[in-house]
Length: 74
Image 1 (tube, rainbow, N blue to C red):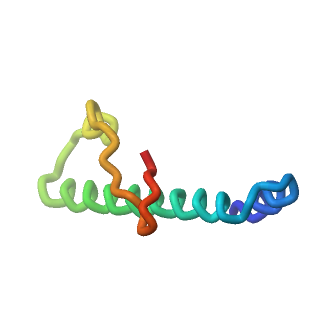
Image 2 (cartoon, rainbow, N blue to C red):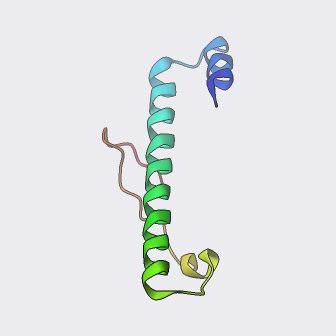
């Protein structure tokens, strides 16, 4: 779940503030992805859609919002 990688990064001298930023961005991306997936399921259940997720995302650009501290995930 990532703890081993964090220990390795700490061992090679990556500053904690950089690790904190990466963790915050990763959590933010995870949360936005979950929200988009939930919205897609809601939409599909309402309209009984047959499009695949790849079809729905075609041509989209990054539209994520910044993390609470202002970090960009794009």
